[in-house]
Amino acid sequence: MPNYLLGIDIGSSSVKASFLDAESGQVVAAAYSPSEEMPMLAVKSGWAEQDAEMWWEHVIRSTRSALLKSGISSEQVKAIGISYQMHGLVVVGKDHKPLRPAIIWCDSRSVTIGQKATQALGEKYCLEHFLNSPGNFTASKLRWVKENEPSVFEGIEKIMLPGDYIAMKLTGEICTTDTGLSEGIFWDYNNRSVSQNLLDYYGIPTTLLPRQVPVFGEQGLLRDEAAHALGLRAGIRIAYRAGDQPNNAFSLNVLNPGETAATAGTSGVIYGVTDTNAFDAKSRVNTFIHVNNQQPAIRNGVLLCVNGTGILNSWLRKNTKGNGSSYDYEQMNILAAQAPIGSDGLRILPFGNGAERIFENREVNASFHGLNFNRHSQAHIFRAAQEGIVFALKYGFDILKEMGLHTNVIRAGNANMFLSPLFREAFVNTIGARLELFDTDGSKGAAIGAGIGAGIYSSFAEAFQGLKMIRFEEANADKKSQYTEAYQHWLACVTNH
Image (cartoon, rainbow, N blue to C red; front, side):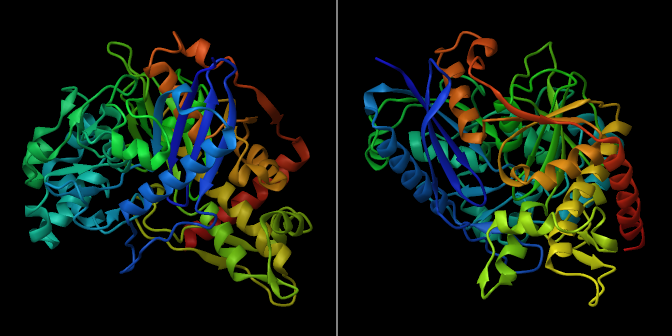
């Protein structure tokens, strides 16, 4: 009887569940929920919150839908893996229910708190011990709750990252991983443990943190109530958990120094693996523990993130019309391709989704430059948006190169912005690296991770036998020259903005 693995990917736009045939490594059924993007609450400028119970609702819907499509028996499902949006904060009381909406990754309310912590603890200390400034990561978000919602803080039994919360709903147990603690900036790389200095400075009791479990390995068993909700049997092992970007790299078999992954969903990321405790002196890119980190062999992931990528394209889709109705993404791509490289002088800065790390946590906001009412059309706008996203990634990629991370090949899933031929063309000719696209995504990666954690696969090599490249693209000398010129003009807009 075939064995199957369930991967669940909790994004900020949707939740995806995939059932993977463990032997072939192929997805037999998958489903998203909801069909439109999940709502994001922005009560004040720079805030971003979501209802954690909403994530669980869509875990149920996507899993049930995928299970129905698959036609497999619940008895054949051997393990569950979780991928989740990074850096969020969920706080629960003694009844394990959320005390407030989750403060998610792109929320920038705690930027000032993180800056003060860096000054108080010392910039040199933070970089050497955290490989980052505390910034607006999870620890700083928690300090914001302590300062601004003291009654909520007093009621906290445990704090969690989004993936920890979903794991709790599945198992009834509250736990986290070292990768998760590092993404929240709770981790001291020198001491290889939770940073007591940061907790003391922020006034956070150690007891609020969950216990640690390994990234790969048993993290609890599916409890009866959750099994009934999902349509599965009780007792299935939850055997893997990782933030979306480390997991995306893992899903692409990016595990070793010099290997690099990219995504371009709501946000855009380039993620390179290193065997050193590398950091950027200005914390414009950030280093976290990678999924396969095992002492003494260091494996860290250096993450370049641009908040406003796919969300810019989504905003344009919702706010533009053709013949009285909204465009779909394919129509937008067709129109964008009608405009020339450089969009005839129109530049778009795609920074309208909170504070940007590549600009030292400043809120730059999105903006249009060089718009001419007599010359530019929707085609130019759609192209300038895609080029602006690529140029923003190039801006950050150069920071990675300054740190000594070099790559000639970048791997990505065949999804989101990478579905656009124009985006791919702009990417390879601007970044200057070969692009390899694979038929994989976060939910598939989570399922593979569960197979490793449950011992169904004996090695990473065995786990990734089913990973196949769909296509690759490389730079063209003529187009590379044109994109380089367009990038320089875009960069001038950033400098003068």
